[in-house]
Length: 300
Image 1 (tube, rainbow, N blue to C red):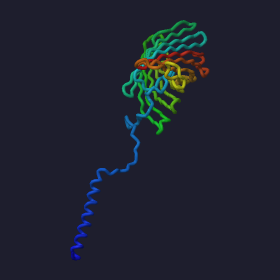
Image 2: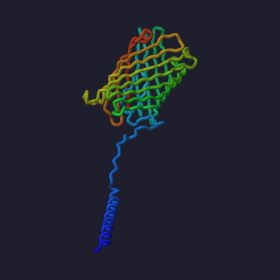
Image 3: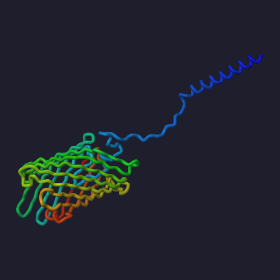
Image 4: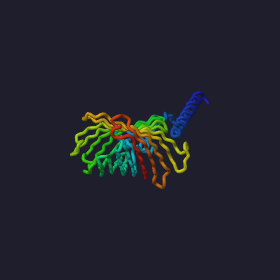
């Protein structure tokens, strides 16, 4: 074989090797692995993405308040409360039936109370204002590990007068609220409202700043294994009012309470509560010396 023939054979062999290599790379392309950086799942949703699927709002973490307005999402709830207060010879008893229903993140509520006031001057009793309310979360933040969880929202309540001896004026109360969870046990619910009264009653035109705080510490069944009990939650509340257009000092009431959530019976979970409330300033002592608040909640 002459030199020209050997050179041509080497060229053809090199070309065959190149073609085979290219073919192998093309065949492995579908099986090649691309290294990517892991991404965190997007848990945001709602208007402007301000809500978070990881939030404990509406998951039964926050205890039902006693004196302070509820701010958590409630899917289906029926509640019976009894408020008993005394100041010297005067007594006030208020029995309230309440139902709440959730539509998505919106909670609607209806309260129907009956009030009886007794004093040396006589007895005054009748249906109090029938309250219709709504609340909705606006913004939620949950820390990456879930240790810190907070929800801000707005609410409104309208008290419809029944024109009884204890109900003369319409009350309108826009509110803002915050539900905060720290860890798995500590909760703090805060609510602030601006009350406006309209109607023929003596307090018509009154403007009041209302505020409330609910501190809770949750013990699970594994912590206190009482048969039939799911959770035990000691609660402390602060409920205050400041009249803005009358020369009256602010009132402030404290409430030391206990909420016991029982094991569910079918779809219904009973939640029992009892609290002892007391005045925290001199103005409040004129109307309330002490009182008892009992509450029975059925979540279904």
